[in-house]
Image 1 (tube, rainbow, N blue to C red):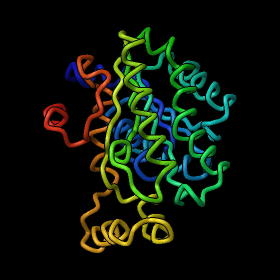
Image 2 (cartoon, rainbow, N blue to C red):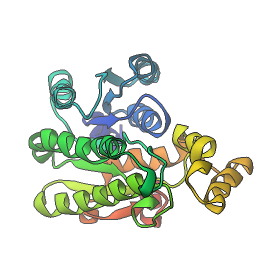
Image 3 (cartoon, rainbow, N blue to C red):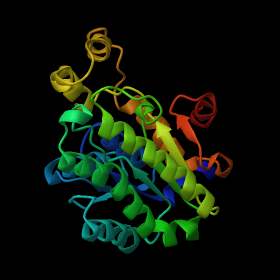
Image 4 (cartoon, rainbow, N blue to C red):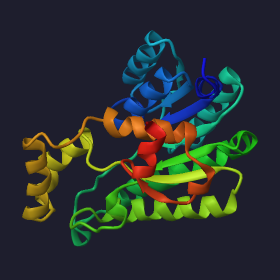
Length: 261
């Protein structure tokens, strides 16, 4: 067994929003690579399917169903990692929502609050709870961000601002916690329920041009499956170099490609 394989088998990774889409892909790939995985999301049945898939591939995984914006669930997820696997090496803050797709003049403040709770506060809480264990392992925090963090879109006010905030959280975390490695990762367009939502409901608030852009890419088969960026994110969760800490990086950055190859 190679040294890299041995290192992977000794790692424990938490993945949020792991019941479907990108989170499920990352969890499966990390597990197939030999790491031990703690998956969490609200859908208990879908989480169980992910755990079964990981175990069938020879990996070790447990599920902690619940809302990751609930502090009780946050603590339960971290405690499960330590109780079952003895250590925690990385977290992938993947859970996120796009809604509300509304223009600022018509939006409901409670909808924005929900978006902020899931997209920003939940990653902050989970990271804070995990920090003592991550410090001990010189571990990694992978925050799933978006190009929307740096490029505003009409109708996406809540999502754009929360992803920008997540990037700043990542930068601050890197400064305050030099022992760990913190990365904000831009996965690009991925064939997930979020993309389907954009196609179904985006025309209500987005510009016609923006909406057509996403619809067109889907019709042309140009939106990659979750496993494609998911593999890169899994590799970063296990092996992201400390000198990259604080960066906002594309999943297909040339430097990431060198880690994969």
